[in-house]
Image (cartoon, rainbow, N blue to C red; front, top):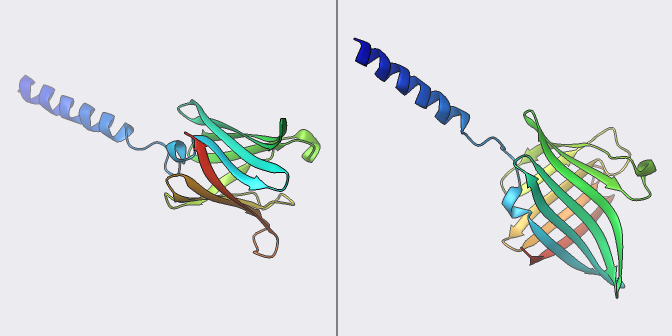
Length: 157
């Protein structure tokens, strides 16, 4: 009887451990986003860099390169808090240099939509991975009439 009890207890503990190890970051772009992405713009190129800080936080930055000059445009924290994922940019010279939180509202494995309907612009930030090394991103107010588009290629992984 004691052996049967120990077997059942062990099976229950293994089952509970396996359930805890399920994907904790449903909707986490992770490996897809890591690296440096660039696109040509007038007078230079626009870049985004992403790296993992720890198991639940990624750090990013956006900057423009013109010749030998580099201008930081924003820093971003992508983080998991409880059961939610937040995209938290701090745009240089906007919003009094304060961060704005956008919550992940939808994901498909290839597209990630972050929203903050209370923010003036943008209300949505969207990343769509169109290939292993290509990414289409855009910000908008929820309509196609007011949209800024970005077509990046990964330059460093």
